[in-house]
Every structure is written in C-alpha cells, then in structure tokens.
Amino acid sequence: MGNTSSMLTQYDIEEVQEHCKHAYRNGGGFILTDEFLTVPEFAVNPLSQRLLRMLNSLNFKEFVTFLSAFSPRVPLQQKIEFIFKLYDSDNNGKVTFHDMLDVLRDLTGQFISEQQREQVLTRVLEEAGYTKDSMLVLSDFVKILGSSDLKMEVEVPVD
Image 1 (cartoon, helix red, strand yellow):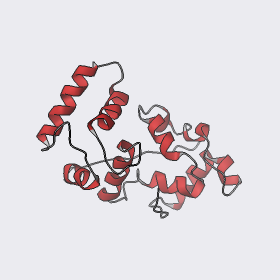
Image 2 (image 1 turned 180 degrees about the vertical axis):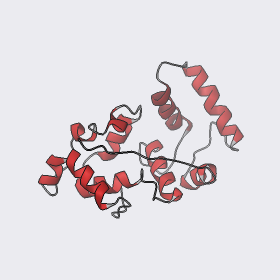
Image 3 (image 1 turned 120 degrees about the vertical axis):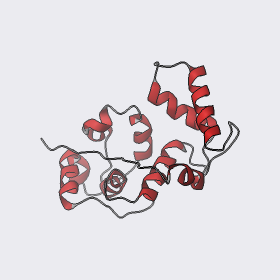
C-alpha cells in the first residue's frame, strides 16, 4: 500500500496478531484469505473480494498498514486515497464509469437492475460536475469526498 506507517495502537496490532497467527508467527508471512475473513466486518462486506485483491501478497506489517485506513485516527486524505485504490482496480491511476459501476454492482447485488445502477451513477456524477465519459483521478475523489464526514472504522474482535 505504499506507506508503511500505521495509525493503529499497540492494542489494535495485538488484536490483529491474534487473527493473523500464521502470518505473524512466520514474521514475513503473507496474510491468508481465511485470516482476513476472520474479521466479521470484512467477512460480510460486499466489497470483501475487492479488498482481498488489494491484500494480494501483503505481509503482516503491510496488512497492519492496510488496516490503518479504517482507524478513526487516520486523516481524511488517507481514507480517500484508500477508497480511490478500491475503485481503481486496474491500478492505472484513473477511475472510469465502468470502474464505479463495478463497485456499485458489488454493493447492490441483485437488489437493483443494471439500468437503475447506471442511472443512479450517471446522476451522482452529473451532480458532482462529471459525465459518464469522465476519468476521475485521485484529486477528483478528494474534491468530491474531501468535505464529507467520511467514517471507515472496523473493530477487530478478540475471542
């Protein structure tokens, strides 16, 4: 994820260690899908498969940094950067209408039709000053989400 610093407390890190015993015991071990899915908030998250792709080949230290995005102590800018990476699934630095539609599809499942999803997304983009043909970059996400009261918090329970 680039930045190797963590906004998690020592207590938070110890909780993560409990859930990721395999990776932590092996020092540089990689986070296993099963370990990631022991966190209930991730297991039931409709974006869990996207999050898992972001975790591909992360060791324990990098995983702790990844989880920092969900800490209430993380600045809004860092949360927005995380969200941008979630949408930018091909890592080209641009988010297209289809990238956003893919995320919306993951979030809504079968609850709304593809046509309804496209209409909703088109309207949201237009309200933000963009079109279906716009390719959003990180600064666009900052502009759109920067004034929001964005909350991304996850509790990591210890049994």
